[in-house]
Amino acid sequence: MKRKISGVTIELRKGDITRQKDCEAVVNAANARLQTGGGVAGAIHKAAGPQLEKEAVPLGPLEPGEAVITGAFELPNRYVIHCLGPVYGKDKPEAELLANCYSNALDLAEEHRLPSIAFPAISTGIFGYPIEEAARVAITTIIGKITEIKHLKNIVFVLYSSKDLEVYEKILEQIL
Ligand code: ADP
Image (cartoon, rainbow, N blue to C red; front, side, top):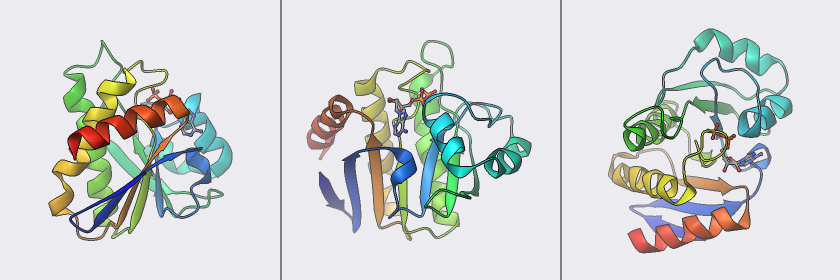
């Protein structure tokens, strides 16, 4: 599903964040220490190779909501933007902290004049954020900043399951 708003295409895709060849940057659902791990972080570090940890770890530790940018090494992208999402029920206010991830990632992409970025559903795995609430925060934050965007042309949400994709589709339709 694709929707164009203020010249920016928002696309929802089912897939693996490590296989987004047409995106200049992919976002990592990182841990505070910017190390490999499970879920998205494990997949991104595995695909990028050990140089990613070498560049990323000295930039940490991150606080919830923060984002940093590194190279992408063996990934088919130019950059990885690492965001630490909130742990649901622990890091509060969680909606604000999750919104900060999307907002800070967009700011980094704009600073680097990137035309495209792919986001996973930050915090909705190990960190326990319910997918529907998280999708609403992700989509409203991006749409809320759309008029500030100068360089990005494509913003992609990559959902790992058909169920998560359906939730995002429903919420994008409700919001637009
Ligand atoms: P967090 O610790 O921020 O919750 P996770 O990596 O555990 O991050 O999960 C975030 C979301 O990404 C979950 O919805 C999970 O299903 C999904 N996910 C896991 N692996 C991948 C992948 N390779 N590509 C895209 N999404 C993924």
